[in-house]
Length: 212
Image: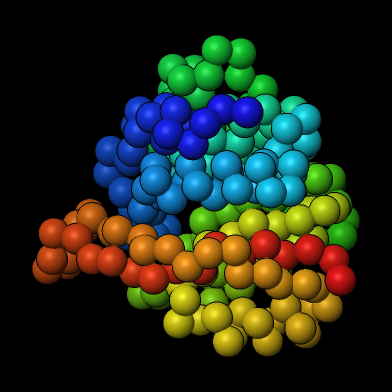
């Protein structure tokens, strides 16, 4: 298995958004967080190597590329934004020697129906969902609910630590096991005109959801 430091080095080469769209809460997952996420998923649970994986809201492909580097059988990246998928495709071609990646343009929130062709299709689903700020309140929960409908084994997601009680209640309501793997500091660089600081640290939980 690739060492964490080497993995992070590859992910530091992932190109980010040219013009991030605030309506979609487009922020790149930091390479140090993404590398630790996927490394833990594989080293602790073996949920990537040889598995069918989905990355919901894949953006520029930080988690998609990370999963592929750790041996995912095939990784499907879903995003609503064609511009993000174009950047993601470039990253896949630049970093991966023999990419086993499929990119699909779709509104993640429409994939949650049991009639969806991807219902329970994936072994593992990973995501760094929109945190639901600005005009997108509740989007993180919508993404998580869809992820659970698509996964056969486990879902790995990032959520703001301040929402942990709310996420825990949702997991109980849905009858799924929730395990907080780590509490991380998400360094958010200034990306939009309304940002007054160069960067801000947000505490986030890295959580694994699975069947009880």
